[in-house]
Image (cartoon, rainbow, N blue to C red):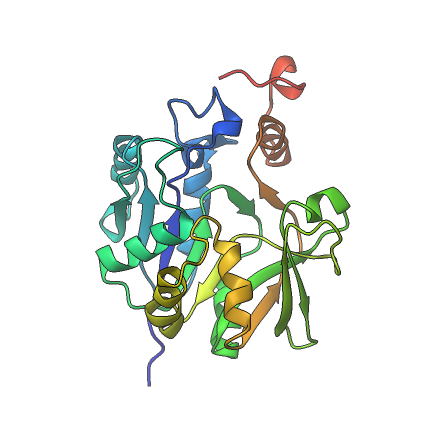
Length: 263
C-alpha cells in the first residue's frame, strides 16, 4: 500500500503587536530574513518533504492581499491555498487552533498534515521529521535541547522516554523539569486532525496556542518527539528579529544591529 500524501498547514494569521511598527502594515511571516521572507524559508523547507501535497496558509483579513501577492510570486502557487479567517485585528483573532481547523475544513485536507507556525525558523530538513513520523506511525512533535532557563520559561517543555514517546508536557513552566523545549512544529495523523482536534475545540479547549493541545493529546494516545540539533529562532520581538537576521548572515546597519530596529 502506498504511503499517504502529506499536506502542510502554515499558521500565519497573527498580528505580531510586539514587533510594531514593523508589523503594523506587514504580516510577520512576510518580513525578510537575509533576502528571503520567513514564509518563503518555511515553504522552501516543506517542499523538500517527499509526497508533499498542498500547502494551506491560514491568514487574516487585514493582510490577505499581502499574502495573495506573495502566493502569486511563488513558482508552485497552484499548490498553495490561502485560508482567510476573517479577523481584522488582535482583538477579534480566532486563535491558532481554530485557524488550523478552519484550514482543514476549507481545503478538505484529511491528513496527515505538517503544521508549522509562521514565525519560527530552524535549519534541519523537515524531510527528516516526516521520515520520523512515518516510522512511528503516530502524532509527532519536535524538541531540541535548550539550556537557557529564561528561554525554557517561554516555551513548552516535555519529558519523554528513550524512544521519544512523550510522557509529560509543561507549557511555559516556571520550574521546567527537563531541558527539552518544544517549538510550534507538529505532524498530526488524519485521525487526530479529523477527530481529536474537533473534540478538543468543541469541549472548550484553549484555541489560542497549539501547544495547549499537546498535553490533552498525550493523555489519550501516543505522541512522539523528534529531536533535532541546531538553532531554532522564535521571532517575536525586535531583538529576536534582529538576532535571526544576523544569524542568517544579513549585514545590518549600525542602528539595526543595536537595540533599535527601524521599519
